Length: 152
Image (tube, rainbow, N blue to C red; front, side):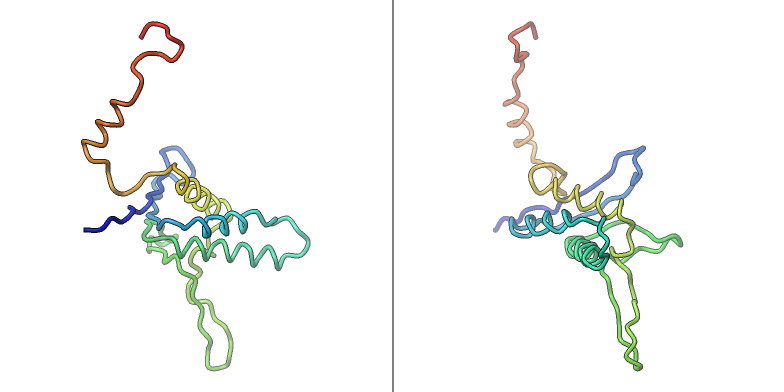
């Protein structure tokens, strides 16, 4: 039986802007993480909007590729498919069929992306709970006396 890394579960606490949002994400390779980091650093405050638009679309598309599932709904309570889709009509016109993550506002796009990136390097929660033996081992490795040598 082989080993597979668990998915990453992103959640926001009560009282935050995205309270109740839960997103299950794929893990990134080191290269993908570095690429994502470079994309998010592109300035959105430039006079030439096209590079900014391209960077935002690329960031949204990378996020959509990483989403396994989420509980995000539109204003009418319908689940939102994270993948951007368009089609070409018989007249040759491009019509957007689904906005996906490109339809998110910048605050939400960055909140999910940044938490996903943080989870890649040790933060975040996986969807596979620790076995009791792992939990006991971790607890037993915790120091039981204060680090300053004072009374416990």
